[in-house]
Amino acid sequence: GNSGIGNTGTITSLVNSGQIMGTVDSGVFNNAGSIGSLTNTTGGMIRGATYGITDAGSLGGVDNAGLIQGKTGIYLDGASTTLTNTGTVIGTGGTAIDIANSVASTLIFGTGSDVQGTINAGTTASTVELQGTLTLGTLAPISLADGTLVNQGALGGQAYGIVNAATIGTFAANADVLGALTALNNSETISGSKAGLFNDGPVAALINGGLISGNGSGIF
Image 1 (spheres, helix red, strand yellow):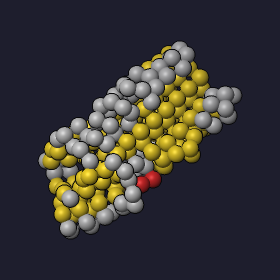
Image 2: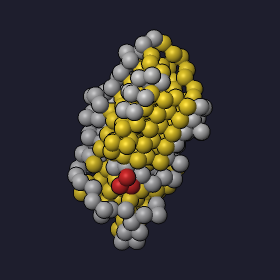
Image 3: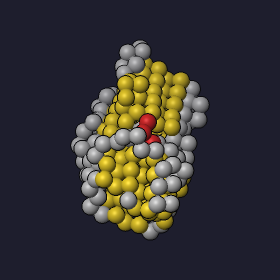
Image 4: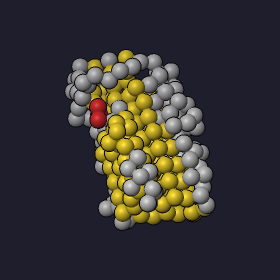
């Protein structure tokens, strides 16, 4: 059908370990309904022709360890949501995750995260948390206007751990951020062969309780 699951009611918990597909619109479309939690387990697939998951209601949390895919992988246009990802999110049209409104949400990326497309964290103070060991890089630049970037993992193995700039060029980094950050909070390790953090954009507060290191500079 247009959507694999279209919800206008209430679902307390939705768990997928199989395949949910929408041939026209979304794999899962929460259309002014309420979903307490949506879990896509390892081996699970949620795919839509336009969106993998659309939320235009209340979606308490998304936990993805499988595959979510659409022209836009995950489209959030409802109430505040927490997304925890250790799986794959693909936006074939260039945007993997889109917070389309001015509601702040929390996006958590852990070890195993494979994100293909821009991560648009909206126009308000959302939070992006990096956990474990992961590389998002230029395939998944993070647009985080007036938001908070939190590192609780071990970022390393690239030229830079984190690049924060108005535009992303060809920097090899674990995380490329396009943002005027309210805060960058590090409690673990940010390292790079050139610098741990390359900053060419505004950061209101840099809070470090861990290690930021590079062969050239810790912060450049």
